[in-house]
Image 1 (cartoon, helix red, strand yellow):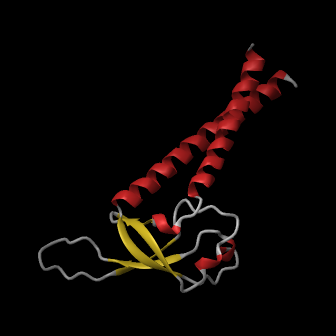
Image 2 (cartoon, rainbow, N blue to C red):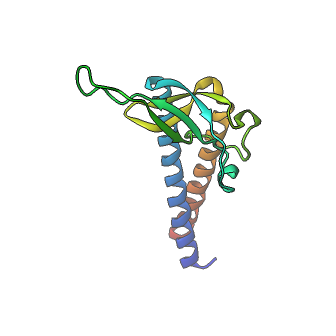
Image 3 (cartoon, rainbow, N blue to C red):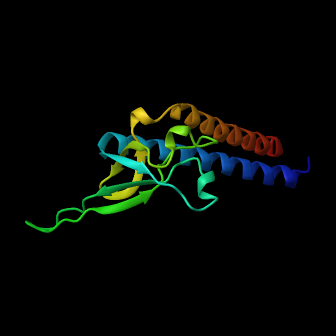
Length: 152
């Protein structure tokens, strides 16, 4: 392999692997924090009228939240939130996420659109996180190996 090609390939693989590992760590930390300290709620799976939206493995969820209290006796009207849960990456949407189905979630009260599925709703999340992490580590190792071969 040409030295320039190996160098560019090594840099690209190392950067991709490093960014993927950072993204995986940030997502796992965010989901853990929202599940631990977020507000629990029940959302409803919404039917999607866009063709490409139905291909997304994460369902579109709808739920109501109360805005933060601004003053004593302030009138509070619930607002409707439409969002997709974070960290849901199967290839196909499971059958239990049919439109109208209730889903237990946790959301961040400061940013209600930041939603994760409740612990009982998630199946094999650790497996998906592990696979993404292995892919990141493999790319990082391959990039570092190419760079080491070019420089050494």
